[in-house]
Length: 182
Image 1 (cartoon, rainbow, N blue to C red):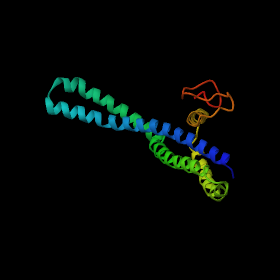
Image 2 (image 1 turned 135 degrees about the vertical axis):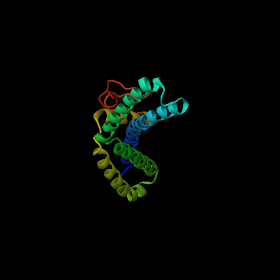
Image 3 (image 1 turned 90 degrees about the vertical axis):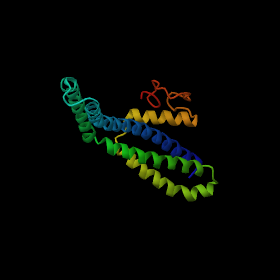
Image 4 (image 1 turned 60 degrees about the vertical axis):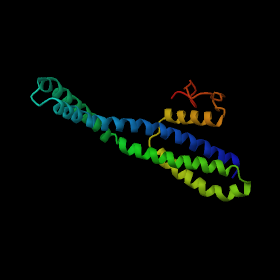
């Protein structure tokens, strides 16, 4: 075991953390929209009835049909959420962020130790890393997400891309098939 192997695991764990942060943001936003839409119609209708009355023509002609359309839209959006298991993907992403961030930190500390200590501690940590890698890979990571994770790691560690030989200065995507095209 050497410091390079520790750095490699730290590098890829960091990128994977960023990948799942991106997913958590995406699914978290979608789930918040569903919650908002689920409450929007009842709040609008309840507020209108409380402020005016149930006999108001605007309520009958405009507000009830509008709230009906909002409810249909929310139901369709919720159906997508259930079908594509957004809540499960969100929950997994949160756990993966925590686990990969811990691995990043642990490998960062490990690479600073003496070689004898690395040899002693590396196998157990590498076993955890491999288990996490298998679990993360089962989450259908796309090529675009892999390139995004690579770009994030290259940027963070100020490392050179092995394909385009660029040391990224910003996160913006490039034409590189290793650290861009995401």
